[in-house]
Amino acid sequence: MSAGVWIAAATSVYLLLGVIALARRKPGYSHLVHTISELGETGSRDQRLVAWGLFFPVAAALAGLAFLSWPLAEELAWLAGCVAVGYGVAVVFPCDQGSPVTGSWRQGLHNLGGAVQYIGGGLALVNAAGRWGGAAEAAGYLVLATAAALTFLPARSWRGLAQRIGEFVLFGALVVLTLAPWRAS
Image (cartoon, rainbow, N blue to C red):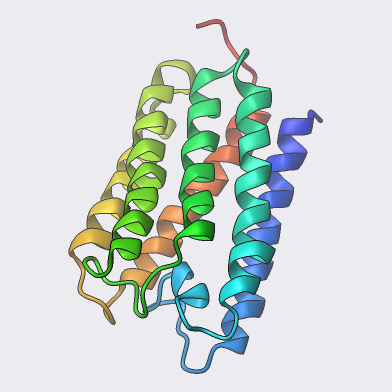
């Protein structure tokens, strides 16, 4: 297996286990209602742990995957890069409490990073359909729907579930695309 497969798979598992472990530490946290960013929201006891212990390693690993993928699979590189930006921005700009759609300037920058992750990642997958087929396109539209849901669903609704679906698709696509044989562009 290539280094890209190991990076994508290990990062996915690390994020999953990290979210599960940190959610158990946050009273009242629900994976169906709360976003992942709320684990490290401003003022939370685990703010730095989530930022530097969870989000930073994910961002760094995916930035590395983007770099390694670029010469052979530009769509994979764009996908990994967009997700890396989303997590990297979350390190520096943690969300406000409840991760509202509108809020402080910091929340605005946090949301901008999320837009790069979900809109950019969704478009990277739609674009990947030419190389990897219709499943990549369908995955891309599902990620774009996640971006819309995170934007328009009110706080304390099903935003957590919507985000988990989007994250599953993004990280699943990273693993699948690293396993896929690269065809000539």
